[in-house]
Amino acid sequence: MIARLNVGGPAKQALFLTQRLNDTFFQSTLITGVVSDDEAEMTFPYPDLERHVHVLPTLGREISWLQDIRTFVELCKMLKAIQPDIVHTHTAKAGTLGRLAAMWVRVPITVHTFHGHVFREYFAPFKTWLFVCIEKLLSHATDRIVVLSESQRRELSDEFQVASPQKLHVIPLGFNLSPFLSESGPAEVRTELGIGPSAFVLGFVGRLVPIKNPFLLLEAYCLATQSQQTTRATSEASSEAWHVIIAGGGELRDSLASTVQAKQLSHRIHFCGWQQRVAHIYAAMNVVVLTSCNEGTPVALIEAMASGKPFIATTVGGVIDLMVGAGQTMYSDNGGVFTLYQNGILVKSQDAVGLAGALRYVRNHPKESTVMGRVGREFAVKSFDEQRLLGDMRQLYQDLLAEKGMH
Image 1: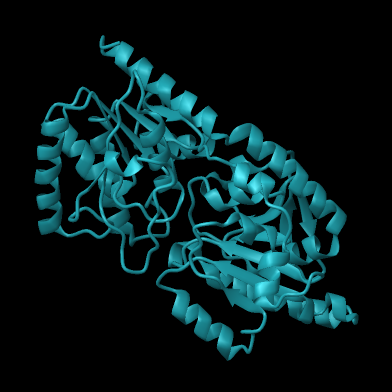
Image 2 (image 1 turned 180 degrees about the vertical axis):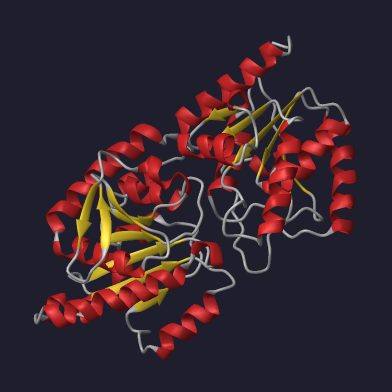
């Protein structure tokens, strides 16, 4: 179960597992809701997958007590009809209603995946406390809670005490990375957008919503290009050589575009909207930037690494688990501080000055940036292959079946 199939990591994983866990041992059905008006919906990436997917119109992201009660009743009916041995929920809304329904109809095994969580930056303190309490209660009705990284496991176990360490099981994300490994050059997208071959291009891929904090990228871009203009006289290093590609959409899209227009940067900052095929977008970028206030394991950074691109990201959630090597603290001449790793750079959340300094570092060290991209690609292929994910999930399910005497 998943609340909605919007473009992103949770939907990709749910669709992949539904498709691949349909064989002589497993039979999988996916129950999902509908996307919001400002979101892009995933297309079905596998043949014949649609027949394994059941859409429940009342299930979605927004909280509505009346709708949620109706959804719970419908989920109970569906589970009674399907009679599953395992219910595996993804995302908070489906995780709550799905686990309650599974408990009500006595499903033998319940699993929930935390792709991220709403315990930071989403809500006011009381609402956050309430969600933590709900998750603590639901953990008692959950046989295993899957987390995407070690830092996420420590956070849920030690800081928020959502569940005991024994219930938390680390399974990193997995994807088909071949499109990113085989994509050739940046010419196609750059030509379409009027970006020259020697331009320095920053990339943002994701939802344009408050938790992703895209305005931080705009602020850092302005700081970095102003600093370059005052310290370097050549046109190549000036703001004229800097561009930003933003691939995604969401509630902040219009206000972000208005700010770009007010700053007279429309010829430098390009909005590409949601993209079903993103490998060619990454190919046009020199560096991928993630500015989130909260994350699980960001899919955009995995895709960036697979594309051979260095990245700059805020130090939030499971991002630290994506870093290769020991971090080295760096100080830029604009007063910014950032931490340099073998495959990318980390800056503090909300730190526009640090992000600007990191952008300038990547711009001014092209050879080092190429090495970062190569190291990141090797790490992504080794750590986030879809076959590894499939094997890990099969093993988890089989272990749980054995524990229940059902294997």
